[in-house]
Length: 118
Image (cartoon, rainbow, N blue to C red; front, side, top):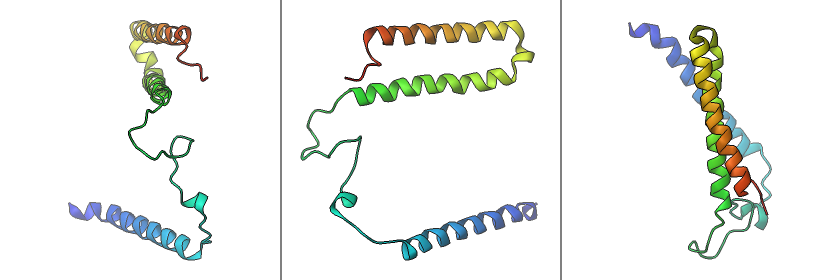
């Protein structure tokens, strides 16, 4: 039975070897021109702070949460669209109810100004 998994093992070894070869070749053959700007840490589009306890703008977190919410919506829409013929009108109504709740939440966020970047 283990002989059936041997081709998968060979595939994994070849993939690992190609990854190591590509990484090593890039390190050896690639240009090495470090500068102060290239070596500086980068996070969220602005220069790093001296102290990690300085106030951080909450808008970054808000945008991330909104992205996750509406990204999950699409994760539910794709499987629903695939099986729409089998689930019928009941499934269609359930998804419209779900989308309605999301639209109400989106309108609420819009009215509160959560989508504005000042």
